[in-house]
Every structure is written in C-alpha cells, then in structure tokens.
Image (tube, rainbow, N blue to C red; front, side, top):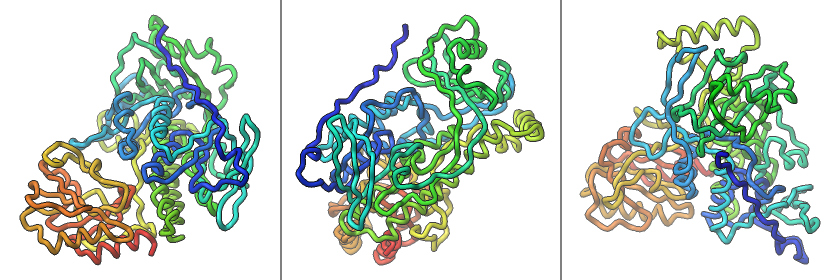
Length: 558
C-alpha cells in the first residue's frame, strides 16, 4: 500500500464574539478558508490588520483539485511567506508536450527566459497548499480562523455588514467593515445577497483519476493527447504530482453516464488501457465533472467584495482558477487596507472590480476557446482541429493554432482607469498594467532576486549606472517620498554597490547580470512606479519627484 495523505481536522473553538453582550465589529471578515480566502487573510495579517476567516468545514479540500500553480501565483506566495514551502514540496515543470493520436506534435516552454527565481509552474495537490497556508496564518495573532462557522445571513448598512453565523454552539452575529467572499462557485454569500453569476454551461463530461503509482516514471511535464489511441474520448491529460501521485483527465463526452463512469470497475480499465495492463496502481481520488464559464457582472456589492470562484469560474483547461483567484486578492487587499485608514477613494475601491472583471473576461475567453478546440462541437470543427494538429508536427505556423488549454498568465490591465499611460517609448514586454518582472540581483553582496526586495507599499525602481553620482538632493527627494502620506520606497538598480549611506526607505541592488535593465529597458535615471501588488503603475525616462507623485495620485484615484 502506497502512502496517502492524512487529512488534518482542525478544532472548532468557541470565539469570544459568541459570548459578547454586544455584536462585535471587525475590520475584515473573509468567508471561505480555501486558497484564496487564506491568501487574503495572510496578506491582511502581514499589514497588521486584524482579520476573521469563517469556514463551514474543519479540514482542507478533499482530493487534489487545483494542482497547477503558475509563476505569478508563486511570486505572490513568496511575498506572503509561503512560496518556498510550496516549491519544495511541489513538482516543478516548464515544458508541456502535445500528442496527436500516438505521435508527439510539438512541445512548449512556459518559462523560456533564464534567470527567474520561480519556474513556469509547479504541480501540488490543493490540500497541501491549503495546509501550508493554514500553518502560515496561525503565525499571526491578529488572525482568527474559525472552523465550523457557517454564514447563514448577511445585511448591510452605510457603516458595516452584519453577518449571521451558525456554529456547533448555536448562532451568533458579528459586524464587518468589509467582507470578502471567497466561498467558491456555489457561493453562499452571493446567494444571500441575491446576486447571480452568469455564463455558458458546457455539455462535456470529464473524469479525473488521481492514482498512486511507482511503476511508471513519466517526466515532470504536462502531456496532452488529442484522439488518444488508448481512449475513445477526444482528449487525455497527464500531470505528475508529489508523493507518486498522478492526475489523469479523460474526456468522456456529454452522453456518458456519470454514475456508471465513476465506478472503480469502469475507471480501472481506462487507466490500464493508458498505462498498460501490467502496471500496478491505486485509485486515490476520482471525480466526474462538468464546468461552466461564468462571472458576476460586478465583483463589488457595497461593502462585500467577491474573489476567486465566487466571482468567476472557468474550465479547468489552462489552470486559471486558483491562479486568477490569488491575483484577485493581491489586487484587493492593499486597496482595502487603505480604506480602513480612511485613505482610499471610492474610485480606488471600484477599480478592483474594473480590473478583475477585465481579467475574468480574458480568462473566460481563453478558457472557452480551449474547450471548443479540445472538444469540437461538430464534425467540421473536428476536421479542422485534426488538420491543424497534423500540420503542427512539421510546420511551425500551425503550432500557435493548437489549443490544449492556454495556460494561465497574468492579464495586462490595459485601458484601466487607474493605470498610467506611457508618455515615453520603451522597448520591453513589461508595460503599465503588467506585473513587474523578476531577475537576479546582488543585495549587500549576496545573491537574491528583485521581487524579494519589494515590500507591501508603493515602490520606485530607479536605474542608475553609476552610484557615485548619487547627489544629496536626489537622496533627500527619495527620503521625502518615503515619508509621504502614501509612502513610496525606492529600490536603486545600480551597476555597483553604493559607497555612501542611504536614507530610510531607500535600498540598493546591483544588476550584476544586466538582466533587470534589459527586461525593463532601464536607461539612466529611468523610473518605474510599482503598486503594492507589484503591478507597474507607470514609468518615465527621467526621474522627477513631482511626476512620480502625480502617477501615484492617478493610481490611487485622486
């Protein structure tokens, strides 16, 4: 018998709120202790903001569920203090391969650039990820994670939302200045608010079979088959996970009987046809699923904000669920943190929905296109798809047309109200509205990476080839930026270590391989303004303190 995961059970603990004579008000209440809710809670805790997380269960997700986490997810997890643990446990991969029937058509690389701290993707069972996030949240005294606390009612007024909660000890109420709904596709919060999530239901059925196996040693790559010779369905997908666990997705077709297909006596022959009759394996977890691509019209409802699957759903092809969900909370938390200080405009709070609806639209579009390619809805489409696959093996022009699931990449927030437009020409792929790139740097002589030097507030990246020309006037301006109402810290990107003491709020890194300068087209005195979520807010060819402050005001909706 191969080793299987032991699901932790967390204790229900009666909170002081349940015995308080008056309803207690909290700054932030998060509904749902899945990956997205936990990430948001950790982010608030890092900012010193008390947070309550409510979950109606008392364990992590059963089954591997979401398994593919992209580089952007890992970069955010690094900032939350969990990234290294995820990478250490996960299976790292960059390469994906596409097969047509029994032939390899082509391969692709999700991280073609060198010199990044994190890979293009890791595979890791969702239950591990949630456990690591729960462990991280337990490190903060300002966080309260309440198991077996079920939301059953919610009302709002101008000052707060009132939540009605059921527990093993009976009901109670609490108030929240802001609520973040991270309670999944069947969001109870959304239902209690009388809101809808609308979109397209796909008439397809898929079987997930997570199997424990040591006999086969497939490489750590994503393999996808169209018209697989071992399976009569349209497609099969293989992913490797930690602990000798393998995820196999079989397309079953809409006419498949889910009750029959999920029986072990029907699953095992499918797996054997794929792996070979002599291969020994054990079924760990199976699921029959259909899916919907849908979203809410607005991710904000007064004092309630929706994130992750409660706000938007996509098909599993492309790994866009958890990856886009953590980008939601990364976008939202810093804005709510300012709101709690009375420093956020309504325009800034509304920008969450504007920016993340744009991302959801892009994800749904890509997800829908992937599904239509993977499971053609008529014979003409299937003939066209198979022709593309046949050509792709020998002809490079056909390969971009192959769509086995466009894998998750962070969207660029183009034409959003609070993103500064370029006023000068830059020759790089990182543009305003995109996440800042990463790359190796020296920090006090030690090897590190640019993203690890960034904090939780606005940042200025200032490129200077010669540290010797740092003037007192410039340093005083950078110090002044750090002491503004909305502080801007500065990272000097230099060619050598500075020989003078830098003021508070100013750090220096050495771009010893010239990677950062190349990736950001960073000429002398070029300045980038990054938001607290490390999104490029604006940039200029010459540093000017007043111009930088104007860009920040624009980013804040002021």
